[in-house]
Length: 306
Image 1 (tube, rainbow, N blue to C red):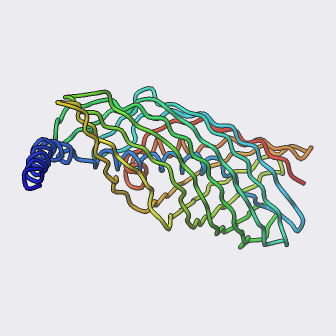
Image 2: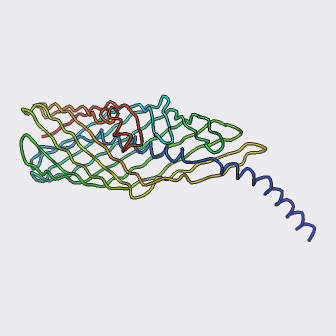
Image 3: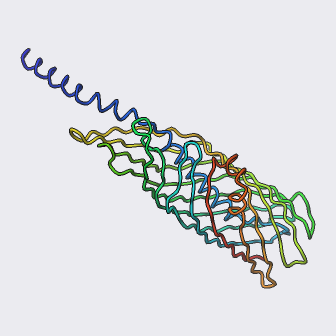
């Protein structure tokens, strides 16, 4: 019996001796670039939601508005520190919005948006092990639902100033993977649901009942944190896999937008959303509020109202 116990101790000790260096090897990899990738992706989602949001303004009791929003976008940079650049990252989105005025000043609204994108992101994803730049293949899908109430501070046929407050839920699912480098594979899986609150303001100017210009500002804050897991596998002398939680913060998204709307006499209006263009061209805003996000989007809004 003592002989068997001695053999077991020797075998366990040998396994620990073999595994311990590789555990340290995996732990030496800095997961900060992977965490910032998650932050950047949530900013991309917030940007598409913001561009899908065409506020209901200049309303009277029992007015309603239904919007359909197709979108296409490309991403040039996800984060600035550490620098995470896009390489042929592109995607599409679709959204729908609804607003109903319960009085001349109050309304309820809802927004549903879907976004998917894929491509490659370039960064020092193996920092701590290797400072070189590598490309991570990414594929993400996000569904967002927003709802809340609005109150028009100013009642005027030419000028409207509604304030918005509400809640949101966001479901995301995505993967990121690096090719095998230095006998090491790294992948990131994220699948979770975020809950949060949102606020907005949308001053709107109408000209001759034909055109409307609506700059707006939206801010949202998640009450929970994104959930992501990094899997690091070393393949020599045999495959060893370790899973680590990717650190993440509550999502804070701050968005400016601009909608130029042509009002049709047949209750159909067309809006061009210029928020993405404005944010991208005014690089100060993206650097200050969106961690250096650079993306280009084309968003058209078709609205039906009474």
